Image (cartoon, rainbow, N blue to C red; front, side, top):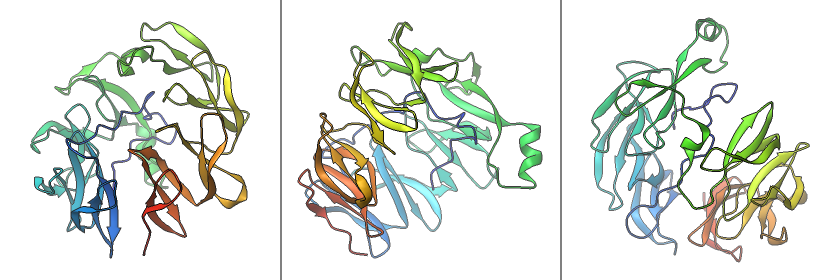
Length: 312
């Protein structure tokens, strides 16, 4: 399983989630066959045989895989790059990945792409590196006492570290920028969320309950308990009417459509793929999207046709 990065209050959620970095070569997608995970290409052809107890998507050219209850990493050819040896891991970001091993139970540190420990496991919570800085947490005394009586997660005092593991001052919100031209960065103030530009200037005043990073010129935001989409001026393009919503990718966004389940809308808010799925995992990437149907996971194209149909 992925390392848990969130405290009960959400303190370890990043302002902007790290972008998915594609592996070198054609994109690959996780599938399950007879209880084992492997990878297909976007045409639905198996390119890495299902041989893993669990696998997660590629980031920074490597994918986390589990064998005999231990986690390691493979490259896009299916070759083991880091032998399975960790209790849990996170995806690579900025060339580093979170790990937890048997030596220090529930403590998290960071490894490099050779599997070498570069920051020892000493944190009770940890988030991915972004632009050379990562948010980490140390369990509070209150949190430790509560954990004896109930499974309430990890309550932590948060700090930021550099790639050497040294504590650094908290970076400003624009630290989380990706460098894209005209990018807007979510920030929170007085119980509302708005957006800054890369210079730290407020562009959209804090007014939303929750707000995501912009994707394809639109951002998914919540107001009044419902979700909709705004443009870079902060104006509604698709008014809030969804119970849940995903960001736009490949021109479409996954949302619940009535009582029949999740489907996809276009940038005008029009239904493109009817609501018939029990869940949508993210959105379209390279023309296909992972969805859940009848308790199983598969991939569809933009016509709603199966590229990889669930069979178990």
